[in-house]
Length: 268
Image 1: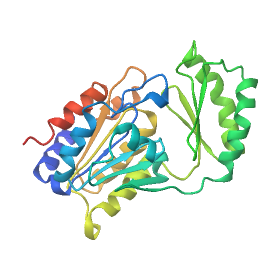
Image 2: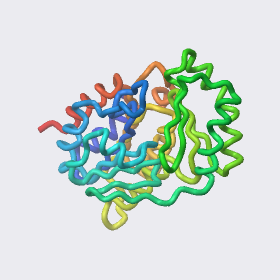
Image 3: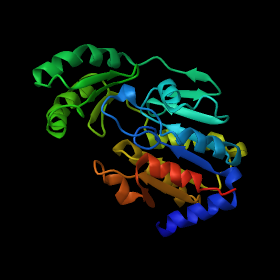
Image 4: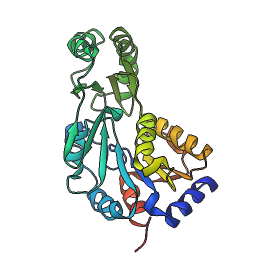
């Protein structure tokens, strides 16, 4: 662990009741699988979060998934105090209540144009499209050459995003066309600014992620450190993405490693 991360961990353990813990979902709390609809949280994730929930100021999951889907796939319904920010912060689930804004018109336009774009680009049949309501995602993981197909589709999907007023978010064998104006760093910071009463800063902040979209949350941790808030950047490591490991304070072995870390975070 880095020196800054060790300081963040010490601060969190000294005063957990004012700490904020944030997490990505896929690849961090849930193993990556070929079919996104088959993803489920690691069996130890929900129990670990439920154990921590009454001991910290706030728990938040910030995910590109629709918030309700992350809650269902994670088995998080009964965890008091947990907040799930879906679609990079556009949606919010809290205490069983789901808030979902209307998607911008560009999403419907992109959804309608996507089949023709994939056909014109020669996308193989194994490429799948996930309709997230607020966004559409193209998965290449099941294609015979997933990285080659990913690179071939990146350009046409970037053009589609620009034409429809959206942005392209690349991930682990996934290219997502989604609304601009929100990322995981903004979502995390906005949550933190309302999580601690009276506008006070938290005693410490942790964020655990695994993919490129989580780098913005790492940026938020760095900005909070500059304001005097100790932070921990935890990486759920994989061979597919190394950019997070290069910036993390601590790298663990996938979702199982994240669960192990959480179980040892605040000893009884």
